[in-house]
Amino acid sequence: MFKTISMNKTHALFLLLLLAVMPSFAQPPMQGGEWKASDGKHVNVHGGNILALGGTYYWYGEARSHDGKPYSSLGVGLYTSKDLLHWTSRGLVLPVSREAGSDIEGGCIMERPKVVYNARTRKYVMWFHLELKGQGYDAARYGIATSDTPAGPFRFVRSGRVNPGGWPIGFSLPDTTDLRHQLLFPELKAWWTPEWRTQIERGMFFVRDLEGGQMARDMTIFVDDDGKAYHVYSSEDNLTLQIAQLADDYMSHNGSFVRVAAGGQNEAPTVFKKDGVYWMITSGCTGWAPNAARMFCAKNIFGPWKQLPNPCRGEGADKTFGAQGTYIFELTTGRERKLFKGAGHVFMADIWNPEHLSESRHLWIPVTFEDGVPVLRK
Ligand code: GAL
Image (cartoon, rainbow, N blue to C red; front, side, top):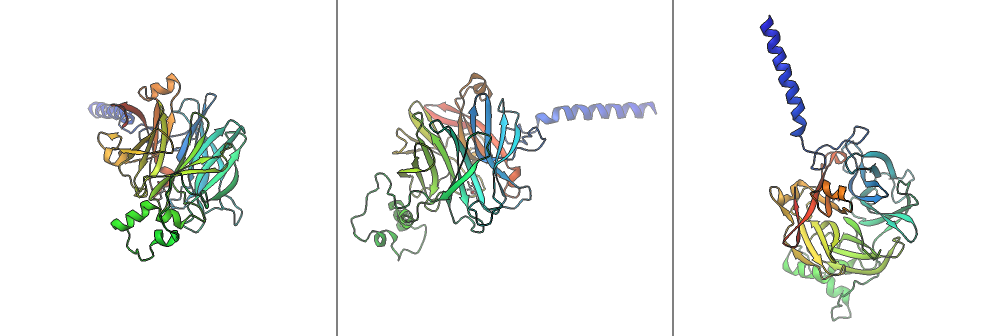
């Protein structure tokens, strides 16, 4: 009898010990584990960004319903924190609309929201990728919303395509009067042929969308040291990136834009600047499935952009450690840098769970420099 009890005690002790050490086997929240906010639920903002304001961090992102449907946008959610580790949900700062016919009517898709502060107007401006209800991913629009306070609520302003009728900087017109015929080559039926690719580079899809405006899907907003802001987005059927400057109030495009890596199929753009050099890290186009990251650098935001090798190193580098980038956040205080191995920037990424987008995990990794180029190590 005594022996049985003592055996049970030993078992219980062993179990307790196991439970005590188990959490250390689980992935930490910043590295793809469950990240519980103060309400005990996993942080449900994805594809978003962080704004640091007077000692508070504002983390905006896609709020997804828990029903597991792909068209599951609830709107844009916000969490706040004092230390980047512990987060409190502040609810939806831009919910999908109940109004029938609204551009953001429930059933629409709102992705990759980025909120920036405009010092001139003292307003918070949100840009996001919008797909209209019932149209899959065909609309390819940007959406804009604004608020007087970082915690919202944000007021939806409008959605649209980018720079209708506008020509990119440095775009040379082919030597023809019938430009559209020349570029669209109606007889060019097969995709992914060398001829097709040349036409993409020359601007076949750019010209197709000239009148209605350029497609805008995966996106980020980059604010430069001089306060000028840029909308960086996958355009032209996700084949070509475009970088379009915003007006001084950040509420529209100012008409200046460039095409980048034409035909290169880049998505999920993230941009940062260090010592006068612009760095851009993107993904390839494989939907929710991870792929290898790509990297570009430039001395001028409008290019030329030079492509460099994948910045990821170590195990999982060929799939961006299972994630896809969303934003590069600058670390300015000593405490922030300490959290990320002394790095000056952190690469925020999403480990998508397409069956349950609300459960998608977060991967934040320091951006360190090796041999003068950014490197991502998990
Ligand atoms: C990804 C993109 C996501 C989402 C998804 C839909 O490539 O980065 O934001 O649009 O495709 O399949």
